[in-house]
Length: 125
Image 1 (cartoon, rainbow, N blue to C red):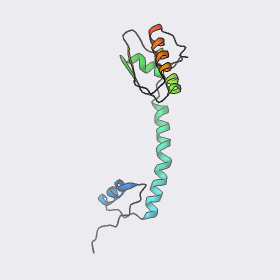
Image 2: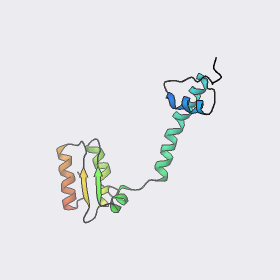
Image 3: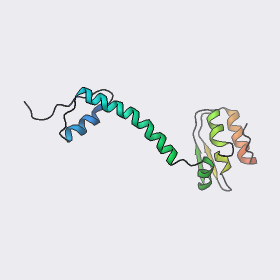
């Protein structure tokens, strides 16, 4: 019989926790792994919310710092929210800015964005 600790894995935590525990010579039970999974499920979304608040920069401010704005959103509404309005990326573009839109939007939304870029219109809709 081996002296190495017995490591139990759960499908949720995967092998990384087990590998880390084995490297540290720690014995984990299934209950411990379930507790770790619960802690991670609670902690990760909270950390992401905190990071977004801490490092949030308005799209217009970010666009004003860039020569190229690369946009890839999933629909017309997302494009409207990201590009238009006083905090949208279009409010921050400047002479010489290049806008590349890779979004999966309707042809009409693409035309509205194109028109807004060329005319300087912020209406977007």
